[in-house]
Image (cartoon, rainbow, N blue to C red; front, top):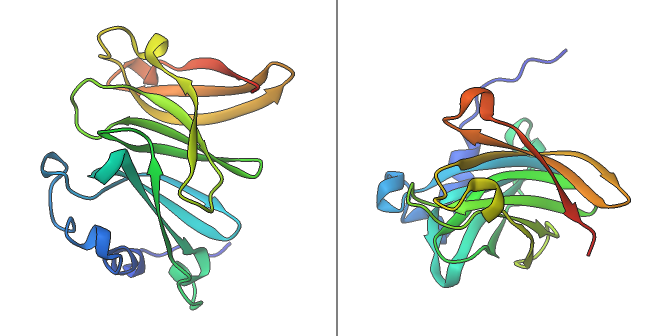
Length: 179
């Protein structure tokens, strides 16, 4: 078994992206850069940002080769701006099939709309799969934090949503219907 050591390469690669460099040392409350979602797909680490909120209702995702962080390969970094809606950022990422499920929620702690989207992992296009208004409640006091793909059946994808600040994450399983 190989030992994974702490690496500084990811911070440097993120800082190289001009869109994100202005947010480098800001706190989340000041629209700062905050990583929330991480997934690995086709040898690339996908890094989803809760903040900053980008123009036109976009959220940031940076991808970089796994071997650039934990080896000596070239970074092969890409930057994506996903249309998640005004004030929403990435809270979690989960690979599925040919793409990535995206848990989106408000960038700040203010109440806002929560949703699950699907992204192809290769473009700036994402689409809404399920609005989570019925899951987080009318007052949106429940804060969806994590997304886990359970399985795929005839009725659609089953996912598990976990919540911040709730006992044992207060897991909720739900089905995203086939479209």
